[in-house]
Amino acid sequence: MNIRTQIIDQFNQVAQEQDRQLPPITDEMSLLESGLDSLCFAILVARLEDSLGMDPFTSDDAVFPVTFGEFVKSYENAAK
Image 1: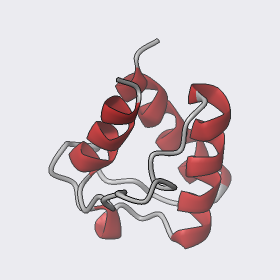
Image 2: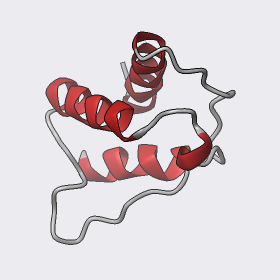
Image 3: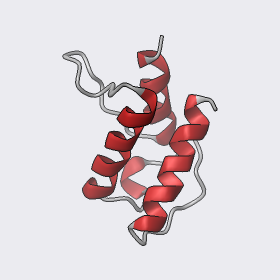
Image 4: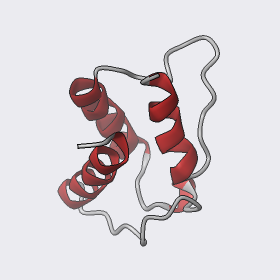
């Protein structure tokens, strides 16, 4: 399973578990308007670290994403 698919799966799973309603997931979707709160993102990043073996937001040169597309790119770039 590729990184994007794993991220989408985790977005949906966390939203369901936390009783959140997600808008359609597109690369342009603003993370602030995703329906997920800070707890949801903490769970999401922790699960992605477990499944992907990385957290791209802990490095000194980390850039925090604004959109879903940037979020995915953070993981894809960290995997290189």
